Image (cartoon, rainbow, N blue to C red; front, top):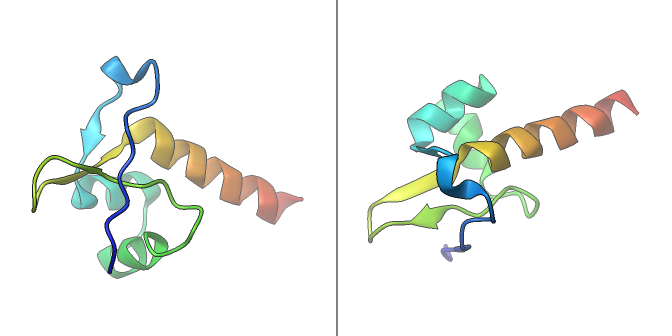
Length: 74
């Protein structure tokens, strides 16, 4: 499994970093589903703070969820 990483987007200073647990709660899915979503190519890449410190930008998770909702509604 490869680790993708991205630099925070501009304006991300006030954007909270979320753990997997917080991310799954934000998206209202279980942990297994959240881990499956992370394997999808369009899922936002995590930010690695260390070998075991993975976080997700809240704004990117919300943008991802909205993009999925728009595709289903279309």
